[in-house]
Length: 294
Image (cartoon, rainbow, N blue to C red; front, side, top):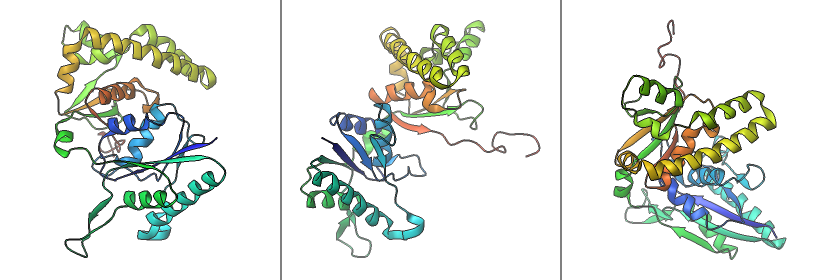
């Protein structure tokens, strides 16, 4: 029997860790969401929070993770409701075929109506929730997290070294960076989150081969790195606590693909122990990087 979870999230939902916790309650479900993009200030929104949590849990795009973006260019302000009704139709088809559908709503279901002071109107999340309930679908609603608590949490960003402009909260977590600091007898807290050469070298060799070898190499490396981080958590607890006491950090590595880089694994771990994973910083322009002649 096909089992689907329809996720609907507020554009202002900031809590990636909570989205992952909620998604874990539906282990045998496919996930569908409206694919609303993250805000310009870096707030992921409910759809992106669920998307990242689904990918972290191993769901595969096109198989068990279904993105349904609204066509804003074609439909303007009506794009959201049109998209929601299309998702409702998909859910109805699954129900009619004997499948099971549940809903998960993250964030506000209503907001003030600027055209009618003192009154409320449905948000896009509220609209999708109402459409699901009209089909008899059970919807779990999770209100927005406390705003003050979010501002106090560590914001965890990731970025490529040389791929984005320098940031005051940069932290080099490469193995090479840790080795340079050690040779210079300098304190380098980033080494706490750097992989060992024992697991990194074979992973880099597998990456050069490409194809299935690269995929297997990444699977082995990521599992081994997680085990190293478990030992790091036990051995260097004070460093982890110091990290979580910060307001913000940008985890830097040289890998081009953040999804195949240990910086994303570290960000995910930090989001599970009190931080808020904010994603990858956007790539810099040549001018931002200071390339001569640009």
